[in-house]
Image 1: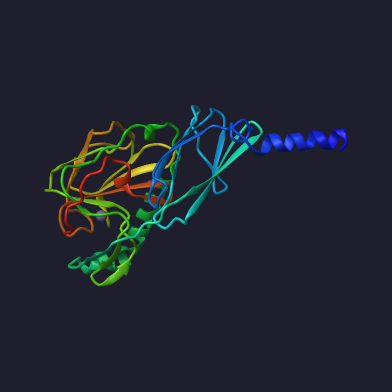
Image 2 (image 1 turned 90 degrees about the horizontal axis):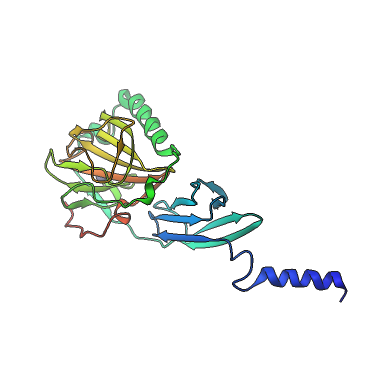
Length: 279
Ligand SMILES: [Zn+2]
């Protein structure tokens, strides 16, 4: 074996194995729920870049980042962390879940199959909501603890396949909490209010709180809004009150969470709490 071949072999051996290999020396801490609807909080060395399935992920200057897996995410996700000239690849196993089927009867027919005259309004509101969800705000409010946004029993869980007045509709991308009209609604986490509208067609009185890096919580069917767009809130701050505005059969809070277009399960970011019987 000549000197060059011997040199190349030793380089390959160095790269290939052992805790001292440069690839494994690339730092990565990852915590949270590697499951459908789950959110994970990560940390890398400041300056490192992160991509998820080939798409760049926003990383704070201190190395904090988040990733989320939607309701129908596949069984694996590829996470690449690049630091200087070394890339560490982790295949994350995303645990599948099963979903309830939820039948809701007695909704006003106009709210299940809205009249053609309402379509422009619905489309315009959908565009607004999408912009709110896709906002990539700097700042790592998402590293702070989340809490339940209201007292009251859980009356609807994330991910259920919905049958509205007998017709299959999109899954339930939120968590419902029953409560009397006027029950305080609290910010689930720290962030900035990016939407405060008293009257959206489906969600009625609606608030959005941006927790940074595309993580957004939304509070719907509110009877009252206590905050304005641009206002900074801490977890637990009163932001509004439970109502039955928009498409709702009774007073409840519809609470949702998303990471850009990925819809996440809010129940996975707060301490466990027993779900009561379905309505
Ligand atoms: Zn709901």
